[in-house]
Structure formats: structure tokens, C-alpha cells
View 1 (tube, rainbow, N blue to C red):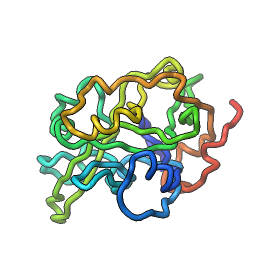
View 2: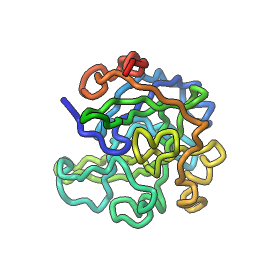
View 3: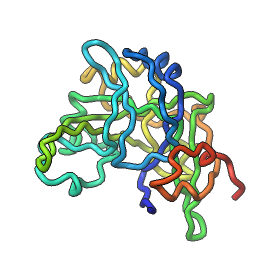
View 4: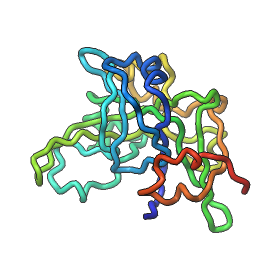
Length: 229
């Protein structure tokens, strides 16, 4: 199945429990985390959220559904990204922005560069090989068709920096470690954190067009191998 990519529509979560436990001071027992190398919207992802007991890693649907949504899940518009410029006012996100912040750990993300009528995928990751901490929001919705609660999230995107702008004009908001606590403590920080990351924090390279296909090969680490273009 092919997927139409818009803004940050595909990323990877390929890290160890120790890496993210130490980065976010996570509570709970160690977990054997599955490498995921081609995550698409509406699938379940790992998200860091704050609780009264501390920070914890929880599964969420990627594509936020606000509590007031009355239609079936299949009719939810694309909400896997929220624009930094409007996230505090848009009805889909404003409630979550005020009270439900989260961080989406990522080992990298994909963007597509248009050239000669074709699109070449690139992989963008941390310059030091570490985990990227993407600013996000979450919310909880009750599915009217099943009665089941659904916890979902979105990734916040902003203007691209000079490095990534040659590929795409948007990029995910990447938080510094010093931003974690004020971001997760809703109200302690606002839109001032939602700015482009410095160019020196990232690296990127072209990858195989195999990433254009979703639904298979999600655990294939060779998807991020550099290719000649």
C-alpha cells in the first residue's frame, strides 16, 4: 500500500530501553522494545507522557482524536501533525495543547524531495546518533461504535531549518533535554519552544524508495541505509 506523505508522515523508533530510560528518567520495568523502521499514521507508537508518579512510556494511536469527536474513527481527518503556528487555537488541538503534552521518541524521520517529477526519500536523524525528542500532544476519546477508549497523539511541526529545507519546508519540533520538564508540565511552557532545531543537531542522506510502501518491512533496518542518487 502506498501512502501520500505530508509534512512529517513517516518516522522510526529504533532504540534500546536503556537509551530512553536514561534520557527521560522513565519509571516502570525494563521492556524489550521492537525496532520499527517505517512508522505510518494511524498505527500505534511509543510516547512519553507525565503522570503523578513520573514519566512513563505508553502506546498511543498516531493521529489525535479529540474527546468531542462524534463521528466514526474512519472519518477523522489527518491529525498526525499539528502546526506550531496554530496548535494553540485549532479546535482539534487546543485543548490538548493546554493540558496534555507528550514527547515522541524517534531515531529519525523521513521526508521526500521532489525533483524532475519524482520524489526521493531522505532519512533525517540526530547528528550524534542519539534519540530525537519530538514535541507532541495526546488526548483520550471514547469510540462511539465500540465504547472503547482510544488514546491518541500528534506530532507538532514547524518551519524547516536551513539543512532540511532543501528537502521539505516543514520539520518536527525537536525538544532539548532542558525543555522536557516545562513541556510536559502543561502551562509551564508555551509556543516559544516550538521552533526549528539547529542545523548542527541533524544529519541526512537519501534512502531507498522501498520506504514508500507501508504495511510490510517495518522492522527492516536496511530501510535507512544510504543509497546513491
